[in-house]
Image (cartoon, rainbow, N blue to C red; front, side, top):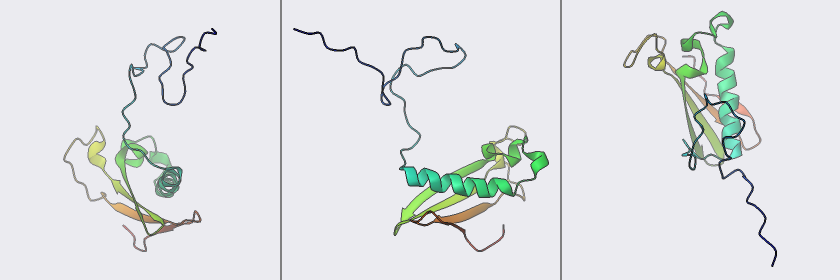
Length: 125
């Protein structure tokens, strides 16, 4: 009777820690996801994030307040459209600390069509 082939890691399993950096805390068990989203939701969020990042001052992109670290993304789906709200949360930056609210806290709302078109809600923060 032939032996079964050894099980190879796939997208749902964790490969052994051979030949990797010891500084990375690779998960020992199954990875606990933050969320499970379909591909178009990820594309919608990425498109909206790129639009927000374009308006940040280029000379300040290394500062937390003008980077993705200060942003919180909410994604919803309704009537075939994805809706993306991006909140500017400087309280997530170490230089400001938790609970800080500044005058440049804001949010932006986007709609992503089934055809892949991104539209921003018509207002200026």
